[in-house]
Length: 478
Image (tube, rainbow, N blue to C red):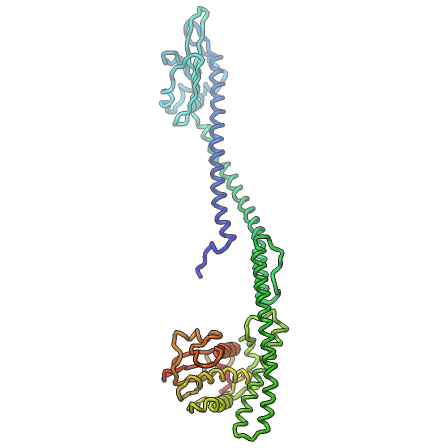
C-alpha cells in the first residue's frame, strides 16, 4: 500500500493548520504595517505643520520684504546635512526665502521644486511624494502698518530618510514577533491536537490489547464521536465470541460423541478373526487419537479463549524445535499403514502405489504425521486414475538446526490448475464438487506443516496429475 502523509490525521491537521496560521499572520502583519504607515505619516505631517507655524512666527515683513532671523526656533533648518527644509514663496511662485538646510543640501531636490507653488491665504496642503518626501504647505497673508497685504506660502519638506529607517526597524520587529507568535501557536496547536486525538491513540492501544488477548472488549470512556464506533466493535466482538463458543461446544460434543462408537468398534474388532482386523484396528486407533486430540484442543480453547486466533490450535513454528529430541516416527511405517488402509477403501479402483522413499525418522507427533499424510494420500487415491508414486528427497535448506525431507506424492489424475494453487489451500474450497469432502484437508495439512517449520508445495506431475510436496523435519545419519 502506498504510504502518504495524508494517512495520518495528526499530520493532516498540522499540514492544514500551518498554512492557515501563516496566512492569518501574514495578513495581520500587512494590516499592522499599513496602519503603522498611516499613523507614522499623520505624525510626520503634524510635525511639519508645527515647523511651518514656527517659521510663520519668526517671519517679519518690512517694506514689503520678508525678513527671517538668522537663528530660527527650529535648529534643524540651519544644519547642512539636515533633512528638514524650509521655503517661502509669494503669490507669483517666486521664492522669497529658503532655509540654510535647503541651500546647503546635496540631495536631488528636483522632485520637491515642482511643488514649491503658492496657496491662497488660509489654505493648507500636505502630500507625500513618490520619491518618499513629505511636503506641507500653508498659505498666509501679512498686513503691514500701511495696510498692504502680502500673500506668502510657507513650505516645509521632510526628505523621509528617517521615516524609512523607522519603518524598516518596525517591520523587522513585526516579522520577529509574528514569527515568534507563529511558533507559539504551532506548539499550542500540536498540544491541542495531541489532546484532541488522545482518544484515538487510546482506541489503538485497546485494539492492540484485544488482538493480544489482554482484554475482551473496548471501554466505554470515549467521546461522543467515537462511542458509535466502539459500541459497534463491542457488539461485533460479543457476536464473534458467542460464535466461537458455539463452535467449541459443537466440536467438544462431536468429539465426545464419537468416542463411544469408536470404542464399540474397537472392542468388536478385537474379538474378530477377520484378516483385515489389524489394518482396521490401526485406522480406528488413528481416529481415536485424532478425536482425543481435537477434544483436548476444544477444552484448552475453552479455558484460554482470549488468545484464540485460529479455528485450529497448531503449534507455533518457534515451538516445533521442542519436538526434535523426542521419540521419532518412522516415515516408511506410517506411509505403509496409510497406503494399505486406503487401498482397502478404494479397492474398486485397484490403485497401484509405487513407494520409493529413504529410511528416515521424523521427530513429529505420530498423529500429526498421520493426519497430514492421510489427507494428501486420500486426495491422491480419490482423484487418481490408477497409479500413485511416493518418493522422498532430503532437503537441508529450510532450517539450519535440523534436516528436512521432501515427501513427494504424485498421481495420474487430472491435476490442479496452476492458477488454483492458492485457492485450494483456502478453508472450505473444493474444486471438484462431485467428490465428497469438506474442503479443509489441505488447509489442515498446511497448518500442521507450518507448525513444524516445514512447507507445503503444489505442482503438476509428469503424468499430468497433481504433485504434492511436503517438507517436514527428519533425522538422518551423517
